[in-house]
Length: 177
Image (cartoon, rainbow, N blue to C red; front, side, top):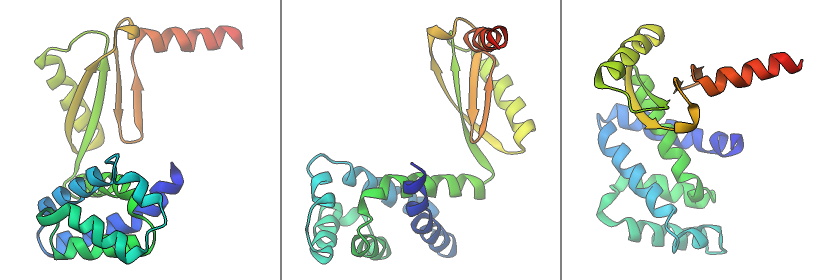
């Protein structure tokens, strides 16, 4: 995983810098997301790992993407194809979004709870995280009944485990040591 991230980072950074310079962050995010979906297609995926010449692969990939990718996006895809890196497009798209969020001072937080949270609870969590992280927070909520009660919040590198399952696990670890 770290290797893919390391490979994807320079491409995402280059695309992001170009998008910022040209005031085209949203269109680049859409292009990269679309190209990432194409690269994950079951028909395309084997071609990325296969022995096609890089120029043929780039031509094929750009042909599949069609009008969804502009000339500059096509240039990025050509460079990635030449370097045999088209298969990391999903990671490039993900890192591009992370760079956009960093630039916009936004962060996505995942909240997993034992029961569905009310809008008031979601708002309270969002406000608390915004204060703690000094960023605008976008919540993605899901339910996992195995937590018993409480929530697990993940925002970037921050993980807050306030679930009963987590507390029981920590108590068990303490008792066993």
